[in-house]
Length: 284
Length: 288
Image (cartoon, rainbow over all chains, first blue to last red; front, side, top):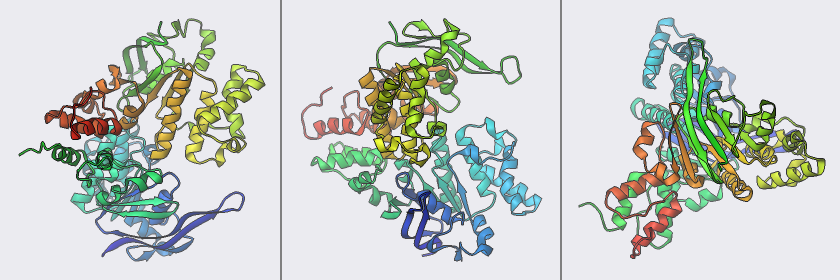
């Protein structure tokens, strides 16, 4: 398997104000395959965001190793290359926008990388087209909606031409349309451009569109598999303060009540089909 | 007799400048009985502008806001007392915690009302209990709390004033599913025990379907729908056009109905759907 990011037995801890040790990540190992789409679930404080910051050397492990394309993140001489390779988009779009014109904001990253002006122009245009915001290139970011701003933040990362994009709850502050826009953009980048995506989220329906879902609890991975496999563990997920998509929950509850119904369901269409079958009303 | 009434409310930002923009236009509604009303709408639809009028943070011009049939601006000097009656919890309220201890922070509102110390102390303990904060947390600095606890501490500060009308702007944003459910349960419990009017601004259609009795929909600064929760969510196509959505469970129910499955009205959550489907699957007629 060709992994872009590898975590080997990573521990991350720190001392709190009273010098008590706090363990955030408790000896985790994980490989993120190149070109894959991984969703990370876990309750607040389970270690998700800390892990994301390890991915591009914003934080370093207390013990164990993190490598990006084979480069150890602890090695300072690789820091620049690693940040170029793995870009992070955070929750609040307003904290990530630095310029007063959309295209200048998107150009900020490649400018810092010392890219040629002509090449920057090309990358900015391409990045804005990729997130479907090209027509807004001369607008002021503060006048855009949350979903639009978040797509500008994504374009800013794309213009640095990373191989992997990590999104830490990118839709937490958005309305339903904004959420849809951001998630569709991310999905398209993965499917059409082969971008490696790691999506941290509290929305189970967003995790359901990934190829792989990993679930964290108290700094460890407790589940890892396809969405269908992971969301099959309804009880375990609820025990760690998480949830499953509503379609999965519905068929699970019916199954518990003795109904003969398919349970490997993660979306609305699948659920409707399974219910029609169970009701013996399947379309001929 | 209405508890909360909004009449002919219009608000324009930047009047007299080239940046003039109408944030809300001719909004009218009335809430006559206690209950939980959700306010939904896309970003920029006017939700926040609307709620800031309800406790007098923005002056009604033109239009009126009545609380218990009294125009809140009838006596301008009394506007401060309106804020004790109509409690407003902003987005990310945890950023507004400022006192040395959680206890003092929660006491800030009741103290401003001018209650005596005994009453203040009682209110603090009561409000902390309402949001599920333990006694030991009360003595801590708010900054030692976890994110979810901080949010609940901030909300307790508003509950401690026992507002007749409680307004919360996106109280669950950024919380994990368990933290979200816990907070929603607290809000529902407050509404019931105090017989209050609660307005909940939310982008989570699942949360709305779970707790709201009624839903008010804002679009482009206008109030476009106001009705029972299941009634409003039955307009799935219109809601999607406004940048909103319908919870998955209600999409499943609509799809089944379109395929001729006879399901009763009023299905808002997974449990409702399961019960209705079980009746069909195990034979026997579903009850409406």
